[in-house]
Length: 84
Image 1 (cartoon, rainbow, N blue to C red):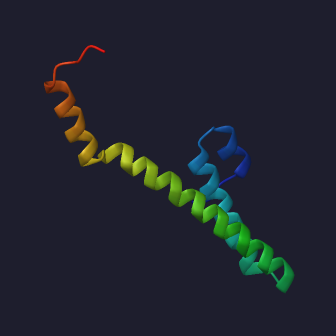
Image 2: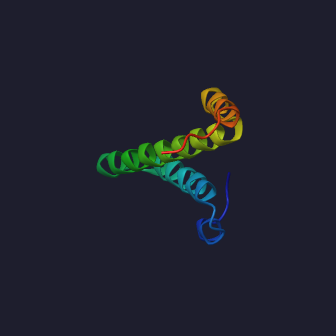
């Protein structure tokens, strides 16, 4: 994914912004000539990749749904509510 980081962040789409940032950091790593800068950029890339993975896994869970959650919903709909 390429594009303007400014455009991506203005869209309000966090995942899209992180993907553009990931690509920009990766490009900076490829062009990096300093070991100190490389280490800092690598840490930033690792953090961005972790954030992307977290968003993608939570989005996948929302789309697919957890089978245990679905079973609990079905069970709850069949059981009468108890008065406290």
